[in-house]
Length: 284
Image (cartoon, rainbow, N blue to C red; front, side, top):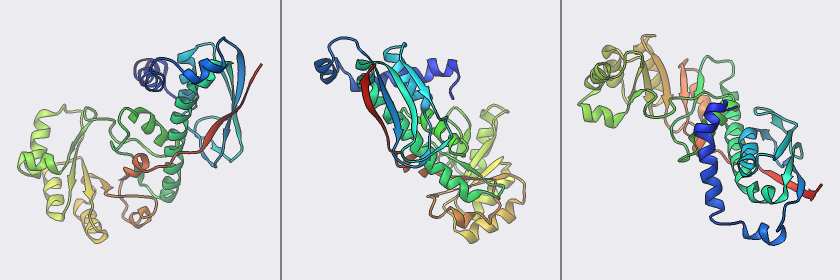
């Protein structure tokens, strides 16, 4: 759940922007059939098994249109829900319920889909020391929602954005002139409280990163034999992350390596939505 300050400063503006995208001047359909205020109620029903996430955002969407809207929830973020579950009753002006429905559901379906997919991947790492991480491969202007959804599904967040940590990728290394040069430049420039992570693609780069004092070494798109050898070279002198086209279908091949982290862009860029509907709207 988002705290009140985060909600007002970072979440509300994004929801308002989404509402403005959907209602550029007026909701013609709703105003045609409901010209005046009328109190009503609708049911929020899950149509597919999965992990629910985004209930606060769902509610907030309606409250930004009319703060008298009330939602009675029967589940919480992170709960497993089965197809057919009544998750909430929504009470308010029927015009608000109709106009906010699609935007509210878009957030809830998307966030629940990310949480559900993440949960299925995280389950494959149970019994290991390895933590599952997301990436910055998020939908523009939806990162705050998608990264929260990853945590609801049992995953962990990597850095939130470019200001959040030092990660030296292939192009940073190329620009600096090499692994050692890039790490030295980062140590000189970045605040001392920042860890320095470097992406490596072969064993020579692994050796350079260790010698230069990288705090975290990311093994990117290396084969299993190379990664196993990299672990022997690093020998506990840095934390180790594995990345590169990791999905639910292939993550099991990495579990025997004993790495600290596995990151997967698929958690946010490839998760399908969870099917959820707002049904049975009627006057009360």
